[in-house]
Amino acid sequence: MPLRFLTAGESHGPALVGILEGLPAGLELSPADLQKELSRRKLGLGRSSRQGLETDRVEVLAGLRRGRTLGSPLAVRIPNRDHGDGREAPLTVPRPGHADLAGARKYGFTDLRDVMERASARETAARTALGAAAKRLLEECGVCVASRVVAIGLADDLTRLSCPVSRLNALADASPVRATDRAASLRMVRAVERAGRAGDTLGGIFEVWAEGLPAGLGSYAHWDRRLDGRLAGALMALNGIKGVDIGLGFAAAVPPGSKVLDAYTWKDGAPAYRSNRSGGIDGGMTTGEPLLLRAAMKPLPTLRKPLPSVDLKTGRAAPAPVLRSDVCAVPAAAVIAESLAALVLADALLEKTGGDSMREILPRLSALRK
Ligand code: EPS
Image (cartoon, rainbow, N blue to C red; front, side):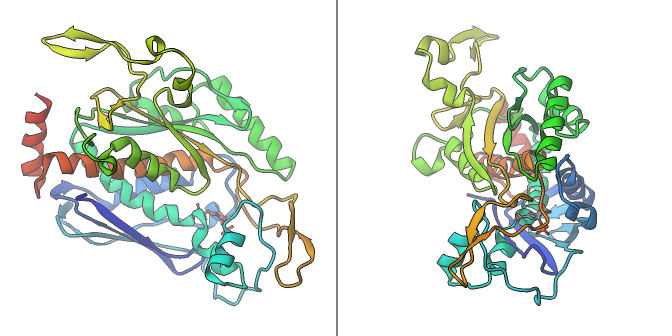
């Protein structure tokens, strides 16, 4: 696996940091490319006032020189403006659905802040910044990654994607909930507002698309090389995600094979797919058709009308703490998931082409596409 990355940083620590190792040399990349994705991550109706406090200004500490990658690790830093001094009163009542209780049991903490500082989705800013570099690499290789929200609570958008993936983000980013259908967008906005007024939270479903992938990334040869498993793992590792599917996904389990499988035809001297119900992956490998990933996010665990919980210090019943939190973070999760998918796809692409520099990679990729 040529691309590796690590992140560190607590939600209210001085900064988040990330290192991406394995980027080829000679990729045109600027801090503005990373900034663009960080700024998109902050958007979306239903975010808490924390997003107003944070500027998410990314600093590139290593790996770039004169606007190009060096082939050395890319290191980034995103300072936290809401930076605590570590003297906050301890928290002993866990929020149902958050990492609080399971994390405290695992590490033996008595102050739940020791869990939530790192379990917080604030960390996803670092993954988004690193994924932005992977997105740039893919872009240079003719691959476009984008996303849209298709459900928030009961408000869903059943329309099929009706624009090229290259235009999807411009359309989705224009909606406060990143939905491409206007009527569905309005319904989702109302759902978030209603949940906010009720002191509740909402989850939802989003899609990530990738277009321009060459056929043959990933492999059937061994389980850990299957691209569907790698992509699903990356998306499941995003905070709050409870399900991931690809192409028809769970809907592929119901109809007979004749309605699910993609038949072939002969086109321009080569075999071609008559449909793309597989979502661009067969046998753990890309087919060359657009990739479609879908993920389900559960509602956020911090409720203004709190759920019953227990105080770990006294053993008595207590309501969960009411802390500052988002009402809905599905639009942000979709943006983060683009970065996560891009990291996996760039890794698989580099595996296929090999090479230390863009000068080596690009001709190999064109040969592959032929
Ligand atoms: C989060 C709780 C909130 C969110 C945070 C994720 O933060 P705070 O505890 O500071 O109010 O705003 O998300 C972000 C800060 C972010 O940048 O995405 C949680 O508990 O997961």
